[in-house]
Every structure is written in C-alpha cells, then in structure tokens.
Amino acid sequence: MSLDPKVASRLKRTPDGLVPAIVQQYDTGEVLMLAWMDDEALHRTLTTGRATYWSRSRSAYWVKGDTSGHVQHVKSVALDCDGDTVLLKVDQVGAACHTGDRTCFDADQLPLS
Amino acid sequence: MSLDPKVASRLKRTPDGLVPAIVQQYDTGEVLMLAWMDDEALHRTLTTGRATYWSRSRSAYWVKGDTSGHVQHVKSVALDCDGDTVLLKVDQVGAACHTGDRTCFDADQLPLS
Image (cartoon, chains in turn red, cyan):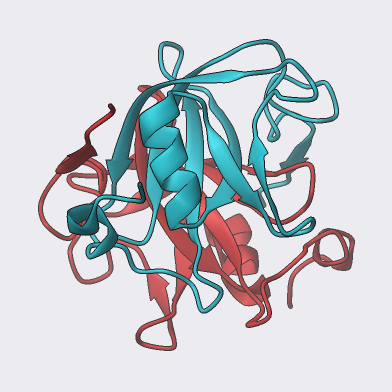
C-alpha cells in the first residue's frame, strides 16, 4: 500500500521529494512545529493516525513520540491550494519541541522595529 | 540596512537561501498560509510591519496585499528551535488565499483511514 494516487498527483514536492508539514494543536490553535514528509510519511500519517515525518538530518522516517513519548495523535490533514504544504491538526502529548518547550516557537521572538 | 547579523547567524536556510514562514492569524489562531523568506524579506518584514516574502515562482519580493489589498499586518515573528522556520502572527485583511478562501488550507481535507 502506498499513498492514494489521487492525493499523490496533487502534491508539489521540493527537489528532494518533500513537502513541509505545519503541525498545529487541534483545540488551542498553537503552531507546534514544522516537519517534512515524503509520500510514504504522508501515507503513514493518514493511515496510522500517528504523525510520521521524514528526517532530513537522519534520512529516516520518524514517528513523532516513538523515543520521547511525545506522541501526536492526528485529528485532520489538509493540503494547501498549491499542493505544496500540509497542515496537520494533532493532539500533542507533552512537549512538541525537543528542547522541552511546548512548541518549537516559544524561545526565540525576533524584535520588530 | 540589512538583517541584524545576530538574527542572520541563527538562520538555517535551504540550499536556495530560504526559510519557510508559517503565517497565522494572531487572534483566532487560524493557520493562513506558508510562504518563503530570504534574509532581505525577513528584514523587511521586521522593519516595515508588512509581511514580505520571496516568491519562488516569480523570483521576486512580494509584499502580501500589494496587488490584492489583502494585507498582513505583522504582530510578532518567532524563529524556531533549529533556526530553520519562522512563525509570523499577523492581522490578515480579507482572504489570505489567492483563491478567495480565508486560508490556503480550507479547500482540500485529506481522508484519514
């Protein structure tokens, strides 16, 4: 089994075959993190209900929470108008960020001037 | 004037010099769209208060709303833990999506199985 061809045909991928996935807490609306998916990671995410990514640094699939316990239960997945970005709404167990922060955007606000 | 070197030194860019920018409505939490920034687009966004992107298809800077009127007033900008993604909180005037939808993720929900 692989990604539904009707979905696959709508994806516009980077040269290395990936699409960015924005990950949002489904009820609070917090943006938790951004990760990357290839077709297989998207297929696994849609069919297992567990957010699954492609790690660009490790060149491996990565089921969020498998080592940390900080699982993401998938509530919905949407493709954007151009087919080049995915929005995942999830229920995040614990911290989304490897630093221990709730989201990957908590620590580093840039100054507006 | 260009991007603050302290910020620039923390950015991890794609091979073509860009970082993805997640754009979120600051009060409702809606994820509106994803766009791309180089250092100069981020600098302009931080200093003008108007969301400014790099258009990969047109190879040009793009001030959101300049042609459509659908301006994004920037409320905050955060860098993620890895320095490779930006989160913009904005006040979106009108539709964020070129299709006329409020967000770029409204039209295409993928089925979970």
